[in-house]
Every structure is written in C-alpha cells, then in structure tokens.
Image 1 (cartoon, rainbow over the protein chains, first blue to last red):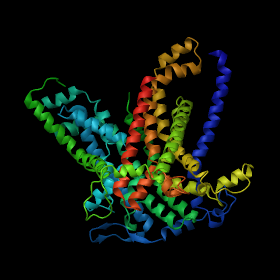
Image 2 (image 1 turned 45 degrees about the vertical axis):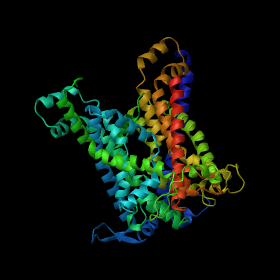
Image 3 (image 1 turned 90 degrees about the vertical axis):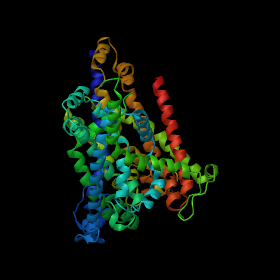
Image 4 (image 1 turned 90 degrees about the horizontal axis):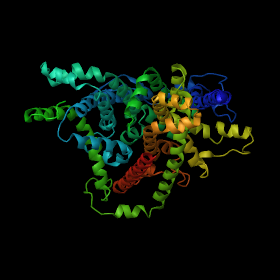
Length: 294
Length: 298
C-alpha cells in the first residue's frame, strides 16, 4: 500500500477537481435559467453574456403572468376566480401529479403485496407480463392510447395523462420487492388471530412497506410532473395544459423572447426541484430498490 | 407459507389475491396491455383519422413500405447513432463519478448525487429551452466562448447545421441521462463485499486489479440494468428533438420516436405509425437480450 500512496493521493486530488468542475457544468443550465429569468432584454439579447446580471428585473415574470388568463379551476359549471394562465397550468400540474401519486401508491401497494405473498393461480404469468411490459418503451403505444382516450371521451382531459401513469407496472414491481420482506409468520399469526384480509393489510402489511410507499410516492410525483411526452399527446386546449406543456407552447409562439421563456422554465422547474431536495433520500431509495437484482 | 394447501384455503388465496390485484390490473390491462395489443393489431391495418370507416386489414403492407421510406431509414440510422454513442458514454461516465464519490461522507456524497440528478428533475422542457438559448446563433454562450478561445472564427448555427445538430442533441441527452446510473452505481459499489477487497489489498493487489477482479463482477447486475435502461431512454429520445429541431435540418435529427409522433399528428397515418412502434419495440427487446447474454457470459 505504502508504495503507491503518493500517486493515489495525486489521483484523489485530481478526481475531486474534475468532479467539482463537472458539478459546475451540470449546475450551469439551472443557473442560466434562474438568472436569465431576472435579466432585462438588453442583457439577454446581447452577444456578450452577462455571467452575473448587472441589473435585476421582474418584467419577465410580469410578462408571463399578464399573458392570457384562465379560471383557477373548473368543476362542471362551477369555475374559480380568474388567474394568469401560467398559474392555472401550475394548478393542473399539481393536480395531475398528486392524483397519479395517490392512485399509483394505493393500487401498487395492494398489488405488490398480493404478488409477493399470495399464492394464487396465474401468479407467475402475471408477474412475467409485468416485467416484460416494463422492458418495453411506453412511448410506442402513443397512437393506440390516443384513440382509446378519444373513444372514452377523455382526450384533452388531465385524466388521460393520469391513467396510463397509474397503469405503468414499475410501482407494482417496486412494491413487490418491499413486500417480499414481510415475514410469513406475521401474516400467519394475524390469520390465526382472526384478522380479516383488509385488517391484515392495513395493520400489518402497510406499516412494513411504508418506506417503499414513500419512495414510490415521490418517484411517481416527480416523473409524472416531468412526463412531457404524455402531456403533449393528450392535452390540447390552453386551459388544460400543464406547466411544461404551457412553456413549450409559449416557446413555439415567441421563440426569441428568451427572458420570458426562462421565467416560464423557472416556474416549471423550481417547485419540482424543491420537492426533490426535500424528499431526496426516499427518492434515491426508490431508484435503487427498483433496479432488478441479478 | 405452507406448501400444500387445502382446496378451501387455495380458493381463499385465489379470491383474496385477485381482489388485491384488481384495482392495479384495471389500469395495467386497460392502459398498458390493451394499447400494446392494439398497437400490434393496427400495424397490420390502414387505420387513420377517419373513425367512421373500420380499419382495413392490409397484411404486411405497412412494414414493406417502411423499408422503402427514406425518412424512416434516416430516422433509424440517427436513432442507432444516438444509442451507440450515448450508452457507453453514460455507463463509463457514471461509473467513474460513482467510484469517485461513493466513499465520501454523507454530505458531499448527497451533494454530488443531487447535482448530477438535477437535469432530470428540472424537466425536459426547462432543460431544453435553456440549451436552445445556449446554442443560439447570436446570443448563445457557446459561440461566445469558442470564439473567445479561438476555436471558431465565425458564429455557428449549431442546431441549424446538419453537421452539428445531432451531436448537439446527444450532448443534452447525456446530461439528462447520467443521474440515475450514478445513484445505482453508488449503491452497488457500497454493497461490494469489503472483506474480499481487504484480502486482495493484503495480498498486494493494485487498485486497478481490485477493481477489475473483485468490484467489477459484483456490480455486473447493476451494469446490466443500467445498459438496458439507458438503451430504452436513448431510443425514446423525443422531447429534445420536438422542441429544438423538429427532426431537421433536412432530417439530420429525425429519430424513430419523433417520426412516429409526426406520422400520427401530421400525417394521421395511425397504422403506419404503429408499424414503426412495433419495429422500435423489437429493436429494443433484441438489444436488451443481447446485452443480457453478453453480461451473463462475462
């Protein structure tokens, strides 16, 4: 060991320097969004970049919020107070991500438990189907999905984005991994004590897979928020857009007003980054547990 | 649980098992399996926008047409280039970063993990629009920096030039692809059996030897998983193309995924688009199978 101490020390310093440089490169786009959103047009449309804004302005956000307005929400004939369109997009996005998260966690926790602990007929076939579906790209089914949603009357409706997200079998797979860890004796004991299936699930199974549910919840929330593709193919009318889709549409309309577009990008990215930073630990766990071992 | 079950217990297990599965199955069968089946079926029909006429079965006509469609062939070549470049780069880059950070203390470790994951969380739209600005012909920082360094002498229209457009897309794709592999490698490397590593070090093995002989075989399953998810991700590269180049200039950045979208939304040829979807799925399945075999042989 002692003979290569010098070179290994030099390598460690080298690798830390490279890591820090890479980290700066990876942080730069976000920095450029946030500072760009606060720069006046003169600074944005200058061939010489202003690395740090000389002058801060909120006019990009004012422009973003003074674009077309929309009701805050619509429930049947009832509609909320009028707000800037971007706020409506944000509300739509939160609704979509929360619903996808709740439905996914609920259905996947139950299904994962059944797959891990119940010895029902067809269990192997079903599990193979789930793994096979996971290995296929979900985007290739876009055309059949659009037609299916149209015939269900859900096209251009936020539920058309939510349902396929809930159907994606990753959550079931993840929950199965967690539920495998429940000792069979505990379930046996509950049965002997006369606990029904529902009670066993809520009192014994759920507390044991709770960390997994947490991981799945945050994972689903973030991936649903950012699933631009599904949002793009399903939603069309201005009031129904999500924030990502709204910014993309805005970009197509005023492709040169980078200040406005950066303000929109900041509005789309900052909330989800904050959520990510808060629940980062659960998230990492979800990714690692979901990986197929062996 | 008991291996042999009485018929009564078995029936009970069946009923309760399927009751727990039911809610999930409704969504899985309804919005994943059913569309997949429809994708295969309609690829053999002339399905289009007109919902009044039933889809007419036309056999393999769509598939035959695909191989004579220059845009599809160009899209296929571009997609393969994206996969062939990005998969090895993502794997090597993330393995290097992970091995450099996995023994750090919790604080710096989390910091680096978060930083490399950030482009994924930021979302494809926000990431893409800021890169579009950075690549811009007049106001972009790349032209400014490269001109300042003397690499180029006049501004380059990065996304508008067929020579550079695909490379520009791949660079963005790379920054949004390494987050998850790094998290996975960090976890795999910290689970490597430490006693084996120590034993080898006592025997005088160098760091390189320890890595290839002991760590590499143990992280093989993770590598395989990363290869497969990165392959699927690269094949699905879409948002970047739709927002930056729409497949242009002159089909230089056309990918299969973007062409499927274009066929569905601009040409309204659903059957034809689905045939492409089936081909894409077959490609991905075949590649995953090959990677699986190679990894198993190692």
